[in-house]
Image (cartoon, rainbow, N blue to C red):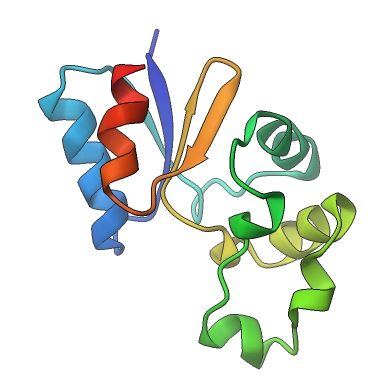
Length: 118
């Protein structure tokens, strides 16, 4: 059984840092490539229940966000966040680390080690 689950995008250096930090710390990690295995609405709701960060921070505000016609007003509520992430999994902030009933967004990188040790 894994100690932590890491929602990972292998093309993201911060996400790769989190997986490497877990390995270096000897923490067993279940690495989930969420672009290949997108989270459904129930899994996103569960993640939001555990998330220690503001829920809206789970949504990346990048060029794709803007190109999709989205604004901050579209990701204010829990229901909006879930709907946007189900439709656009690539907007999930990364990495996300989940341990038991806690979850964090692994940005900035220095948050990762503290979370893995807790």
